[in-house]
Structure formats: C-alpha cells, structure tokens
Image: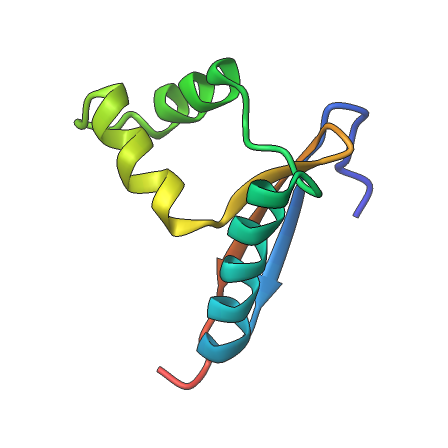
Length: 87
C-alpha cells in the first residue's frame, strides 16, 4: 500500500493456531541458536511505551518474551500475529 519506510518493521499474519504456535516456537529457537536476534533493550522499552501498558517494564518483558512473537532478522524487527478466522 506504499506505507512502508526504511524504518518499517515486518508484520507477519498467520491464519490458524497450529501455524502460529509452530512459528512462535521457531522464533524462540531462532533467537536461542543465533539465527534471529532478540530485540534490544531500547526496542523493548519503545514497545512498552507504545503500548501504554500498566505493567512495569520488567513485567512486560517477562510476559512478552515468553510469547516468542517478536524478533529481529538482519536487524529488521518483525511481529507475528494470529488472525484466527474460525472464531
């Protein structure tokens, strides 16, 4: 749609729970084995501020990191989102 910029991240949408859970596991494995990079402390802090969360930053990090739906690939941030049309 032409809305991207050089600073844009990548939003990946999955349409069923099985694929979404499989991809989340792959993201966690990718971070663990160095194929993907975890977000920097600055990236996490920015995401926390953008959410306007009532959680502290530490609480937010514990909650978000376990989900495995955010990482960097070659320095570009991506997010996984589930859009389950069967609900």
